[in-house]
Length: 183
Image (cartoon, rainbow, N blue to C red; front, side):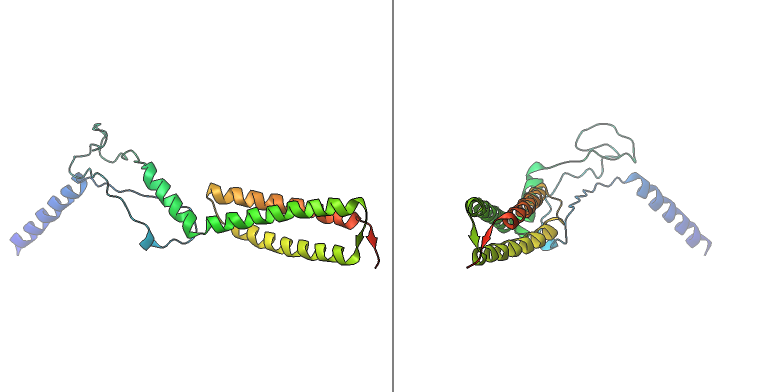
């Protein structure tokens, strides 16, 4: 019984010493976005520094045990992850929709300027107001959706959508000043 106890003490002592002498290396990638399907992301293998006795395998410097290894940034991996996120969250479709609304607002501005020089029928003004209300609803939904994203591409779309909302508000004020002719 005594030998068994001595054996266990030595075993714990040796395993404790090994635990402090083995250096580990890990890579942490933080992607600040909404839920992400782990099956679509792949992790690229990196060089390991296990067994280097506290030295960084990448730099060869004699860092002491417990110091963090330098962070490795793989630009192609970051770019591919970003492209994957843009595709996953429908950047192309959202960009096309924002651009389409912007063009429609420009067309409405031309139409309102044209009818503002003379006068417009009640029917035309009510049609334009209906289109503007629909656009306002779409812009509101799109802005709420785009505000959730942190990627710069989505932030640019959000700012463009805010600009669309501002222009639409100005057009609504202009349309309210257009003289209406009763039919």
